[in-house]
Length: 183
Image 1 (cartoon, one colour):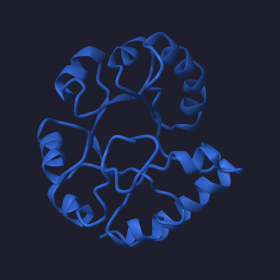
Image 2 (cartoon, helix red, strand yellow; image 1 turned 135 degrees about the vertical axis):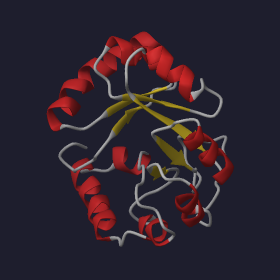
Image 3 (tube, helix red, strand yellow; image 1 turned 30 degrees about the horizontal axis):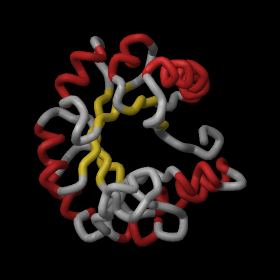
Image 4 (cartoon, helix red, strand yellow; image 1 turned 90 degrees about the vertical axis):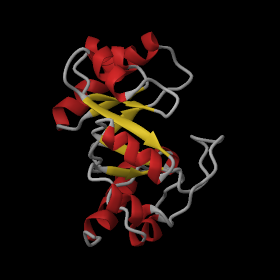
């Protein structure tokens, strides 16, 4: 992923406990740190305290932005998953540093969520002034449509991690994103 130009990496290990996640993060952190890429851990802000992790990402049903910051016990990036413009606006008002917006399409990483589609991408960018990462089922095949709908940043998980050449897949996505006009 680093060789492919990924700009941020989130460690999301829903079926692992905090100790296991901390061990995984310890393996990943030297790579991301040396590349100057922020490592964000999902859900467990206490891991941010123990390591030089850049931040934590919390979902709608997880701790609040303020609780995540307090639990991290040091300045860090805090992101929030959002599934509507209202949730995105609320996350920005609560002090999130960025949001994930979606899922745009059905995705195996969020099987219990109904896809929200592309129609609100432009509206959320108009409503929220923090970075917005469009998420959920995004891949090289539908990325042009996601960009055309107004996305400036995206998260690609399954197709990237299952690609025969992860670096080439990431570079192809970066090429499409870098060529997109800023709305």
